[in-house]
Length: 108
Image (cartoon, rainbow, N blue to C red; front, side, top):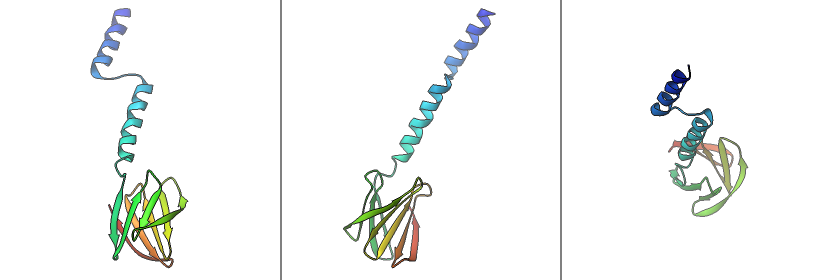
């Protein structure tokens, strides 16, 4: 019985199977790499230049710093004057509002 269990363990290690903690760490590492994919988002919507640095929580609308006014797990909202830019992290989209009215949305 001990030989059988040893053979199963050796087969698992050779196949790349490991403990659940190791698999969880691998998944977290892959998620971290995917989340870091967008260090800088640059778009132009309706003639308005928007640069967003999601990791630093900074944005520039028309080359002027915008304030982070709201942050949720799936979005960051920045405002500068009459413009509001919304960065949707999960769908990788940026939406622009002017005077509280929706202008357009673009996919990165």
